[in-house]
Image (cartoon, rainbow, N blue to C red; front, side):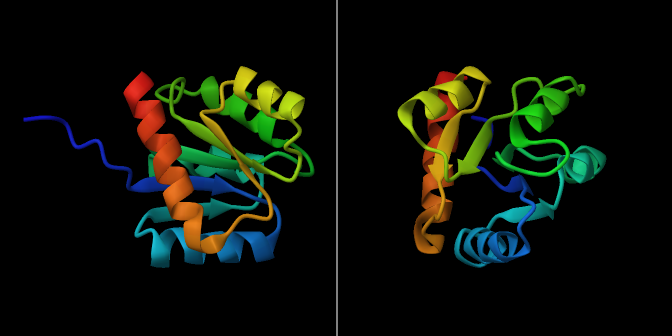
Length: 133
């Protein structure tokens, strides 16, 4: 029997409460995912083991630890070296996107995102990451 490759658990780290609220609605109500939303990189690191995410969604620009620094810290945790990560950011110039991918992101979702298609965008990145992985 093939392993269940479907995405269920997502950890989202986003410092803007409004964006978190819209993303929660988009991913839980529309996407049917189990979402753990954190407001900082530090909080994400504290909660990651409790939620055991299959995919991590990170804001790039955050006070304290930014998205890239948070991802580096997550990569050092046991069991998360290869967990697919997606950056959500308004900075989507092609060189910026290349930088995020070079940091090990599986994909980049531009902000503002469309709440109705966010779950599909994330599922698409997940499927690509699984096909490569």
